[in-house]
Length: 315
Image (cartoon, rainbow, N blue to C red; front, side, top):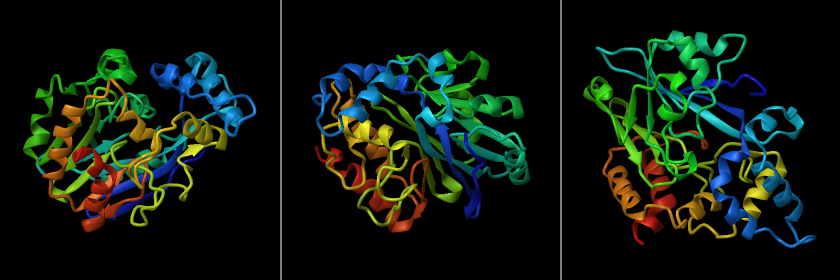
């Protein structure tokens, strides 16, 4: 992480830390490498250089990636979402944790809000801060979703036993009973690819999500992080390469092309995702907090969900 993120109180009991630049290993996209290679433009064509660099990055081992200097790194901008837990639990739930900074300011801010009781890993690609949180709050309960195609079919509990994850939504959720009783609902956005885990915070009527709603282009109510031009991916070769290799245009002005492309993948579980959408549409949502957009509330929150996924729900 290049610099310590700022944090703000969004509403009573809701806080947002970020955005922060997170190193993003392109090898996470290895299951999609064949698709990317097939979409590679001809030498000299627009976007070729960026796409070539992107593909070379996908082929890098994790060890080689970690050895890259910052100027050669691929980055994703992300928020961390924090919500107060009601009595008798007290404390806070942290959704998609960012790495704790060396100065200790972020940890101090979290401790001021209340002890961290629950840490949510939305899926395998949102794990950058998990290790530092496990060290800082050894008593916290960690939860993740079951694995999907992009995680090789294994959950973070299987791939990262050092995190001591106590609950896997979609497989083993018994440890979450006290949080469910306190008004939290764990919504598995099951699609066979990411199996994104959202959390509905009943007392605040807030939906916390990672990659279900993210990054607007033309939807003014959700300005998104970094402005209107794909700036959630940095540097430009990362953003342009990914866009070039995802040629299917999104049906939504809000949903990025790359997320819409994933919904058309042969391994995408359309039936399960339809049921997940129906669950989200039934929620009484006053706030929509996302890892890759600015917070929105009320009618704008519900409109953002419909603008993103209404086309799929009607398919």
